Length: 429
Image (tube, rainbow, N blue to C red):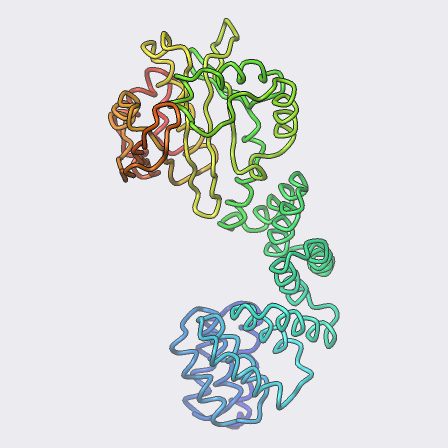
């Protein structure tokens, strides 16, 4: 005959089993049945709290953690898991208090040292966090989460080689750890090991296809940044050292540079410029925070202009756009428009930027009107913002921008791109 105590024990064992399998619903059902029989059974209250924390039902989780701790105040593991739930909620001060209480009861808990390290990271107490992660590893050397977190802390103080080693050790213990692959990729990117970084981001995505941060990180280092792209009459390719002579001609064109960029040195020697171009060409745009193209006319295979995305902010997914065609005879042929559409396609569809901005000098009214007609929005007017040494006057600057949402809903760009590029670039690819 089943006794109440054996019934409770069986239900709790089932709850633990279901929880280990990730079957939170059945685990919760078993726990609630135990609570109906014995409202203050501490292990049941604690397991319910963990289930609710893991399913992001934090109000319920907090209530059950408090109930469990009230019944069993000397249970260090209860305090430690409650601290972890508080940290996940961003309640850093209370998380710290509960970590300290837990470790005062039992200082040998690797999990709680790891949680405390995360709390210190949230407070930007990096050295203290590193100490906690090392403590966790002292008590449990084969602890991949602590190794991953240690790598994160080491990255914050720019100890990239040590961070790489820590992530690699985590992955030796758990080869199916997407966060560690992503974090390793970030450290390698910082070290300039772009191809290796790309491969690790791809491994993270393969393990978790909806891993947003890894997807964005991969887009930063993707090979698409190197590829030329073409339209009907034009194609764009990255600068190379052979472009030095053409660029020097552009830079020495006073009228052109007065509307394109006032700040580029105009009298660089071709040999020095070629060296700079060669060095830049060997680097990935994510390292340069910019990408520069020569606009080439198809068939004739001759340069007719330049285009750039500069000041690329990958965190905010935005960049500043510049474009220029030195020969005024090309302005009425639609070539600048086609090149602009190609850059917008690249920015919004190929590398998933969210916003493109541009600065237009006040005397470049044609560019201002064309940009607004295409769908850019005027966002600012900076009065007397730069000094033009040629005219001896201060110039106003117009700030314009286009967001991903503007781009996707732009009927004019849809029609123009369909005609000039043979596809509607505003559609989600």
